[in-house]
Image 1 (cartoon, rainbow, N blue to C red):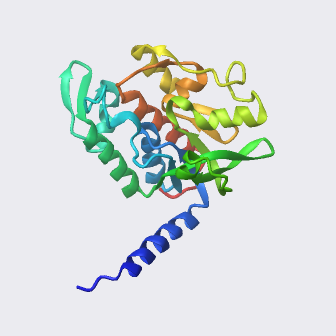
Image 2 (image 1 turned 180 degrees about the vertical axis):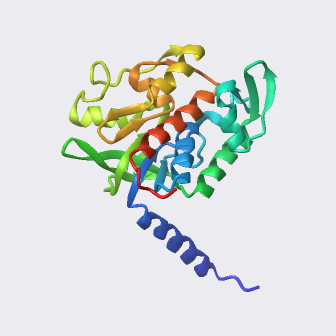
Length: 262
């Protein structure tokens, strides 16, 4: 079989550019490809909502790959077991109310289900700013992560979206951009980014779902970013709340598209 390197190059460039062009206008843009962002993207795309996920790193999955302290096992509580089952992730009961999964399988399953549902995933792309019109976020400003890391002055591109999900974990990057650019206007007690509190898994796993909501017009937060924005506790290497938070933000946004064919 004859192989032409130029054909290979053209296939990659044309395929990627087609996907990116199609993603310059979308229904929901999820920023951050950790467990919450992937779960949200899965449920949104499953309902026929055009969903694009941007992840700045080479790999997606956030902190799940390493489980706890590089022991690649993930722990989930009883409440999240039904999501594991829906995603066809093998789990074993450790003791009452606790389940353990292989972290590699867990991330791989989340990624595959997300893509099979129809969500687009772009890795190696950072969100460096937002577009705001009439006090609502209407789009994202994106650039290559390598450009950011190299501190190169290269102008970005933009994408238009109806809604944004900040799933950027502990850093809550979208929330911080909003505060930095337009002031303390988040839907928190002070309008500011409150920052996460120290480790307390029991409370953190409860409040992460409670804090999953709109933080600025058209911008929602989920996963660890939710606790960070609203001053909740860190929960460490237990991931059920991440899945439940991703599911909740998807449900909140699905209601915004009542006529969307499912």
